[in-house]
Image (cartoon, rainbow, N blue to C red; front, side, top):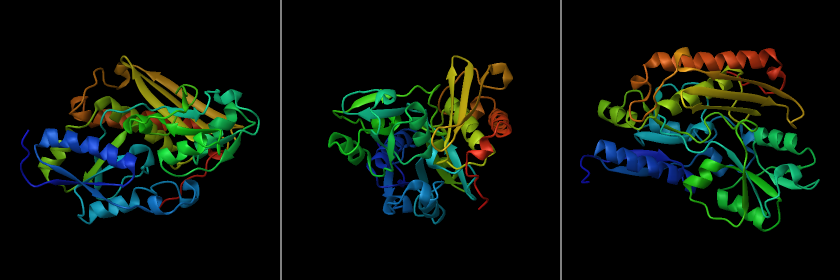
Length: 334
């Protein structure tokens, strides 16, 4: 295919995973737009500050600088890991597409394949996520937790070298990087170990005043079922006013025409659990047929997204009634 017209500038973090994710979107956007797409590397605070994510403020630590660059015209669109985005709308910006989701599960990596529940007392597990810490300790209270930052390769190397006994990573990141490792992988089932809202999904963000041709091209990358599912998940997180690094797991997915939702809020060490869930049928306001390229417009319009938000808010309300507010640090308005 011959590409014509001015290049579209796609802003991305410079990490290997971010560049890989953005590269996938760039190629898809070239296909639907007929224009070349170039990657513009942008350094965020989360890339330069090596402190714990929870101490850095969690929500938006990777997104703030990228969004500043987009508003300033340094690029035309951004690709984010959706789980890292705050749930509040960003003034002047819009998530124009959520492409089809990858594997949303977490994976525990060990040297010998010992299941998480059977790791020895005092075994050192590395993760910087309060949710993953709580889930790991709930599965095996005798573990010791080590706060962990760094890229995928450096994290895995610490297990290979024996510094850590296990780490927890997102399956989607391993898949997108096509990771090869001698470590043994234990995927955690989503019904028992729901992951971060939006995990495995990407968000393609642009300015509200972006040219119509660009908005239309980006919209063709949207996957209707992914958008509905992640809207439910993020509405749960928003409804309990918890940030994206709070000890909250929530996952929504389709099985046939049924939308299954599971949400859980954990105590810091997994000692408490508040949970809720639902199984919804298409006649309750959800799409019968998925598909890519037209997003919610082809799935019945914005009313489907509104319905998804309502369902997520309802689950959040029930979680709060059952005591979830005692387990999370509520987000303060910015």
